[in-house]
Length: 196
Image (cartoon, rainbow, N blue to C red):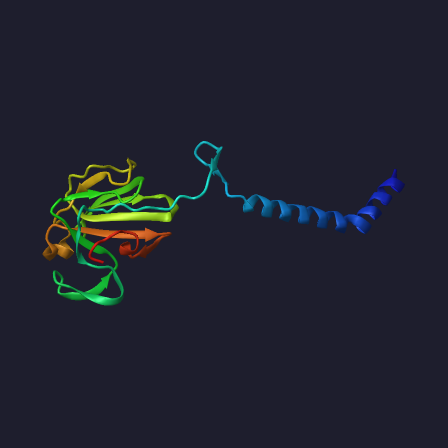
């Protein structure tokens, strides 16, 4: 018995490297072949089922306000003067207004927060797929959604108001912020705005 065990150990020591190399090459080959296909396999963590996805669809944003007039553009390269606060500050949002005060979700998503602060008034935060999060501030406190509501692109979520105290001189307007993977981004790069 010991003689057979010794032969097996000698064989593994002599040829085990080749077996290990074969397994590694096979694993890499399978990974390349599976990742080269157009279809992606995604595991749905809620149901633990495997969902077959075809090609990724482009993300198309709706406007948060119909026929908007931009009051202030996003600017991350220089300070902007805030008339209300009488001070210079960074401005990483879009301020827009419209004759129609309805505010719409820019993408399908889930409402993750509805809160009110003195500075920004009533704010709705929506999480979307692909790492996007949108925030809508200076809203009327009577919102159309609550936390955990699922919304669709173009769905009315609230009404513009003058609730943001730090921008009160802008009048009735929407303070709109967009995040991608946790970083603020310029919403104008994602929205089709006529007066760009």
